Image 1 (cartoon, rainbow, N blue to C red):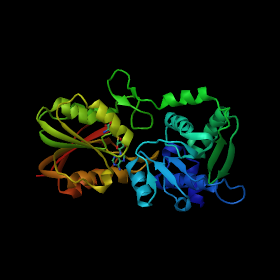
Image 2 (cartoon, helix red, strand yellow):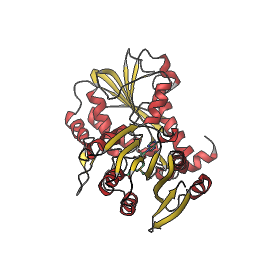
Image 3 (cartoon, rainbow, N blue to C red):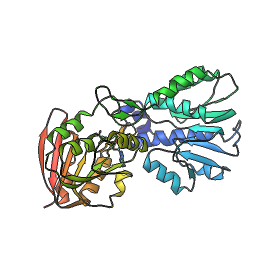
Image 4 (tube, helix red, strand yellow):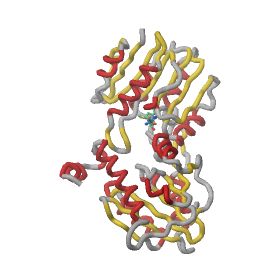
Length: 358
Ligand SMILES: C[S@@+](CC[C@H](N)C(=O)[O-])C[C@H]1O[C@@H](n2cnc3c(N)ncnc32)[C@H](O)[C@@H]1O
């Protein structure tokens, strides 16, 4: 790694730029695959399961590896590599690979899930960047398994244990509960670990919901819909909305949104979709609180890609209602879009940008 990488890797994980995060994620995948290369290489079994699956060229030579990946862009990359993908993790395998997401609860829940999917005597192998707490998670798994072997490379750890009938099942059972669907306190909204804003309603989204006009009508889209907060606000507030389409990359969030919107009588459609690829339909109104992170790293280009997708999908007379952190520079995209737009209000953290195709 060059000096630029070394300098950035000393930053807290949350502050990493996009390229550094991508390098770290790839580094974790590389470290995972290192376990099967060189001296002391682990045997590649006849079949394996990969939780949080990311395509790697070496996997093309494996006899059979099934992947589970809840995030649409990564799942699409896995599919493009010609690998087999499961919609839900199921079955029993002699080897389960785990490349965890970013939240602690999600990571431990995935350890428990991997354990459930192991054949007796099977091997559980995890890889994580050091900055994501790899040493801490390795210790936790070692406590549950009795012993794990570890590889340290690329500022990541890959650690693995073999099920020998003596693993601490109570620890795994506790971790399993961390992945269970739960309700955000004082609301009726169902969430699961790992998705956006699982402990509270996002204050930016709440600000937008408070400022949505009640006269939205026709066909509406919610881009990056998460577990459905903004769509719920639209459906409650705007009786003339006939149909709403939710677009979301995280399959688990979309499943929660389906549950959270079940009581509404309107026509609701759920799309597991990468918004950066654009939308097939056209809309009278679009609401969004666009993502601006890839993993933990800020990625304003992701938000800008959302804006471009929204601009392209507005009908004539169609309106865009967007909330964003104040420091995110989306105005230039709106300016270049040909839409008429204005700042509809802000507080100390968020701004509301409303636009119309005239
Ligand atoms: C800031 S959150 C807003 C969630 C929800 N609208 C709310 O207000 O609570 C952005 C959402 O965009 C989703 N997302 C990220 N990248 C995406 C992509 N490429 N395509 C679709 N959704 C994406 C994230 O999973 C997340 O749920």
